[in-house]
Image (cartoon, rainbow, N blue to C red; front, side, top):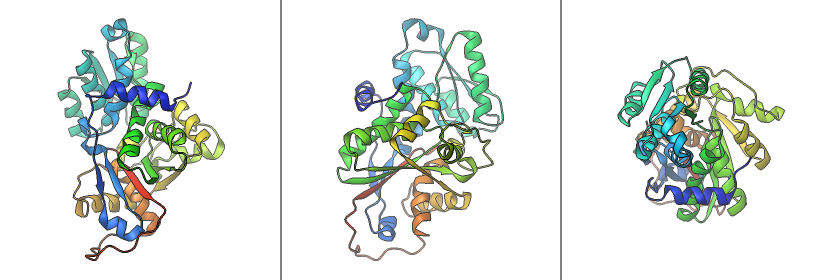
Length: 319
């Protein structure tokens, strides 16, 4: 199995009228430091506060009537949980979501408010995933994986279609990476529709299973250490996303907790945006590469910019 540009375009048709076409916002302070335009793709303004509704809705919209009647089960630290909960309610499907016991309370309450039953289990997403899989096998409900399914990946890839339409001269797209579904969908679209665009993935250094896995050529389990970027703290890359990212040659970098904190602060102080730590890692990676603290306001006039094109960090969530 794999995902193609045609799959992503079909997913976009399914999502028409369901999701928001999230805006692009210039980040002038970072543009000044980098010397290239930096434009933020604001999925923190998506329904449920993250990109996850895209893949969740596409996956569940393709269930059979019998599967819909039986209900669905998912596991998540919060954003996939909310995406599944809202999509299930929109489609008339009963949803049960397993979340780690220390999942952020606002994410737990938001998931319940969207209509799902929440069960708290495990210390991290991987343990919640294991419990959810076991329940799905015992109950006959459909397990909605957060990243390792072609429909989910196709749904997440619709972000790239929007970027191409909004920023025709994009040259680099920087994507937060947890299980890899978002990066795989985005990379697929650019590989086929605009192969000159470079896609770079970013993980928290304390949860960087992809870096080790790509080095040896197969998914490796790495228990995440403590990280503020709970939304991308995944210990084992998805089989399908890993195969796609490896085949497409996507580079994955890491950022430290301190760098994430700097990115988070820059988003709040300079871009005037409230985002979650996982949503800030793409900006953190740009700042780390250019050693940019953004603590000095840019001058009134913009400096000459290089011609390499536009950098688009995906701000994946704001919960």
